[in-house]
Figure 1 (cartoon, rainbow, N blue to C red):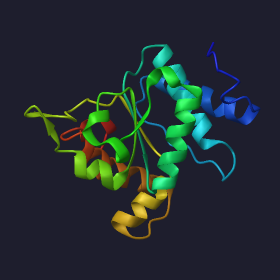
Figure 2 (cartoon, rainbow, N blue to C red):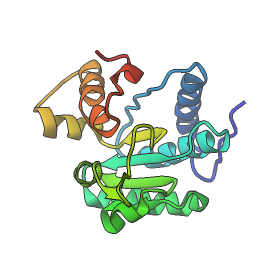
Figure 3 (cartoon, rainbow, N blue to C red):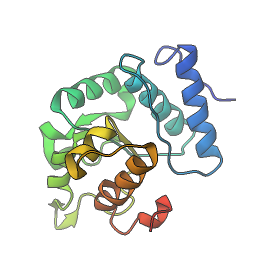
Length: 178
């Protein structure tokens, strides 16, 4: 049974989504796509999933990406409120100094600029640095990078083939994408 912190996500529909994602990971699936309406608590659901996955030692480091700075700020504050022990950091403000934090929150563009950053001659974000990547408003990323797409499969394939391949080089095999 999955122990959901109801202080983070206590609405029945949020709990169903969280359980579904956790069951998906328990079946060894490495990807999930959540489609939720505005105002339904997507950030809280993401935080609950991170809470569970870190408590059960399924993930150590998390990258939360958003397309706009206000969303990054909002997410970082929410992570700090509900999961302060994970030391969430807004990397748009601290740069590579926050790379080792357990939760890193960033815009797509900032992360793209930092992906090859080095500290003491070592890449900050090597393959496997993040165990979990959450992409908030993924449809906006797809539209920004590739124009207008429709359909869940096109969004998933585009994200798998573009952003994730940039963040984790040579990792497409992890997402069943050729």
